[in-house]
Length: 52
Image 1 (cartoon, rainbow, N blue to C red):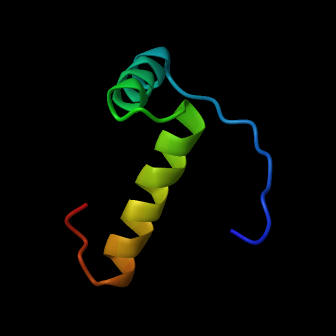
Image 2: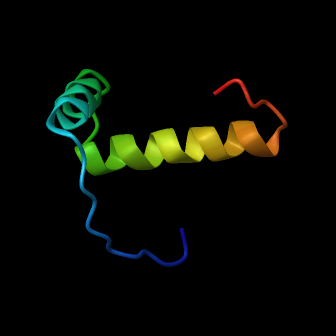
Image 3: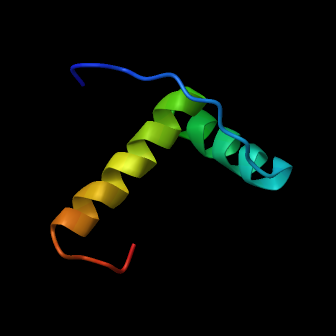
């Protein structure tokens, strides 16, 4: 990433809890987990795989 942007993100409490648990199990920060999932989705879309 050349440049970073800070945003405020509102999530339902259950989604936040799930993401936090997934981040912990993957030994990532919550922010890193969200970025990882967004990048994975973007890469899958770019590759033409819309099943994600």
